[in-house]
Length: 364
Image 1 (tube, rainbow, N blue to C red):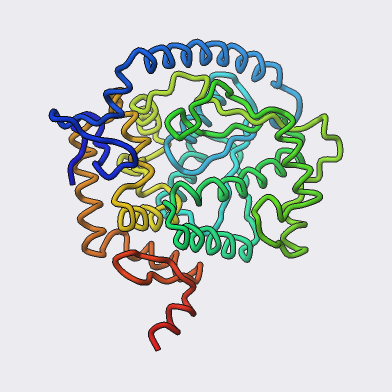
Image 2 (image 1 turned 90 degrees about the vertical axis):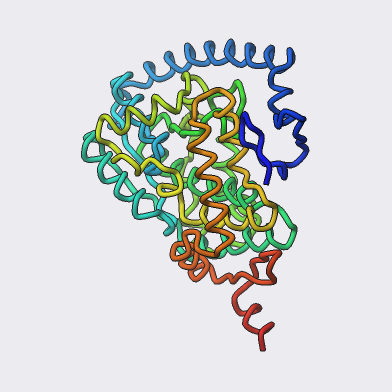
């Protein structure tokens, strides 16, 4: 498979072409005047957002037991964000992790190490196991049936579940701020570093009155009760912020900081090891069905900026592709995910995900 010499996007990436110099159309477009002006506008907005975020963070200091709730996944970005906000703003910070049952062993180790080394309090949010199983089964089956990339269609609803539990925790504990570690490269290239209040109120109301609409599936009474946010006064609600949309996001500095300070051991910052195990299944799914993975778009942006080592990532892509073709890519982890969700791989080479019972019937 051909890849762009500059950003490593594959020739199979939707809508791109490679020129005679093996440079993709996205890279060429990013060198144009329109893209340069857009980047300059982004930087101006980011500077204004940083000033506003500074005022907001300092104004919330000392309001209650905790000033800030930070989503901590066990990856390098959320770890750095937790450290930066706690130390730079001297905030009383509580770390929050959603355990959906698919945390990797490396992520758990990173969490334990970070919490102990940083000296922060930490709480778990655990969604109903029945809901998690049905949700992932529905999302993955739907992506398979509709011939859609799994990474692009599954992650956002899953994050919605995490955000709901974090909002509930913040509301119950009267924590005024909730910080999420989305980076500018994760498809959230927006001048808004915070969620508008009316959207937060809408999430809270729907959790109380129509939780089914949050996930487009029927919840049981117990599941709905577990997810409802007990926030009677919708004028006093947590503010959701995305600090990396205001800060100067540099992945090299982030990686170096979390390792040097001992929060994450060398090698454990690798997203293949620290991400949710369902991600591994989705990467395999996308590469086998579409010959590209949504994450490659994120990494290509960093490669264009020179924030990642091109040869290191070229070797990583080759290794992952080879292991997937051989059927050995993270096999134990992927099999465990499929077993819990109750799905089976079916109909090669199209790699459809179908309910295990349906796959068994087709073989009779």
